[in-house]
Length: 199
Image (tube, rainbow, N blue to C red; front, side, top):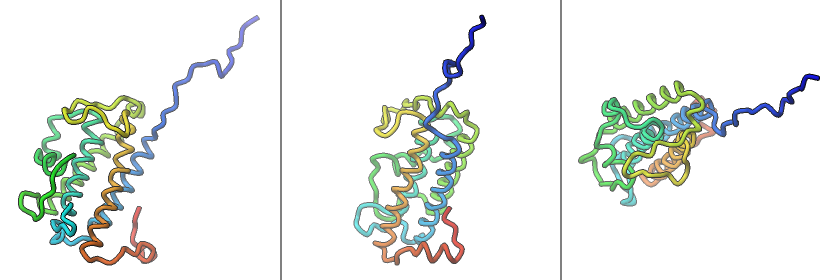
């Protein structure tokens, strides 16, 4: 008598905890919110430090170098072409543990910062879209002397997820700086009713 194979006895690939489409959606949506906040601060205020802690320019540069690390370096390692993607001095100026200096001396201009921010973001989206889904469940590439691990994640999908969460922290920080510089609160509901898009 032929044996029947029960459906639940067939080995199945474990379901990933990550959704590439969701990661991409969050990256795109978060960046819209970031730019909506950044554009509210006039360029001439980008290097002001109302509480002597940080300024808008540092946050924008940090968002760029963080996206490079979280979305590219820790996912596929460094590549020679990265030199054209993000300037080498960004790590010292805006990276983990960097010291913020008041004034614009030694820093890129706001327009240059925004250009790099956009360039890195588009590269992360391009590479993430082209990435096979199962890569998200691979271990992160920790081959940088400063980063031997990360306290939040150890898988590539986790690095890409954390990228959006991390950027939201800096949206809030820029928003606080904006208020400390004298701006009125953002009226999100009124702006939304008037047609401003936040997603």
